[in-house]
Amino acid sequence: MRAYLILLCYFYSISINAQESFKIKFVANSGFSEFGQVNTSIIKLNSKDSIQLETLKIYISELSILNDKNVIWKEQNSFHLIDFSHPSTLLLILKLPSYQSFNKLKFNLGIDSLTNVSGAMGGDLDPTNGMYWTWQSGYINFKLEGKSNLSTARKNEFQFHLGGYHYPYNCLQTVELAVPIQDSITLVFDIKKLLSEIDFSQISHIMSPGKDALDLSQKAAKAFYVKP
Image (cartoon, rainbow, N blue to C red; front, side):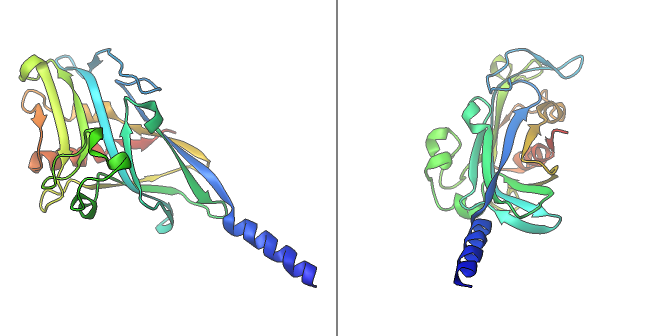
């Protein structure tokens, strides 16, 4: 009987501690190679507009896994800087309980207000990553830079640094996507879709919190999809 109880406890322990890897690979559908290098080729959006990308950085936070509406796992200290020029940042490996099934992935595009008011931090939140303004404006959630032949700015450049955590221009966006039952997914950022929604002849710079930053943040959040 004693041996049976010891064996039962052993298998229970294995069940509790059992984990499996769930991999999320980030890719952009144009402008960057699979390995993160900037692709210098021109992106043709239409007969008038052509784009050359230079920088695409996105803060992902509060990653969680859901089964329908139920959160079954939530990452602690969940802050990830996805830099499409640095391949090492484009793969996230999550350790999930193996006995749970799930069908949705949820995360924030950006950094929450509490973290913003906590000042500059380390790791992916380190100011040396070029994604931090000041203690007043906080973190840049999303950075997109490049050139458009329609931009009236110097050398046809555009720079969109999106952030801000004060109402009514809190740029934090929540993204929720259905995921297939498998151990890895490719999460595509549809950069062509986002670029096609920007009139570069009218706007080429967003460098502080405000309505323009909020509007473009909402469009950026809708540009994610899971590759079939």
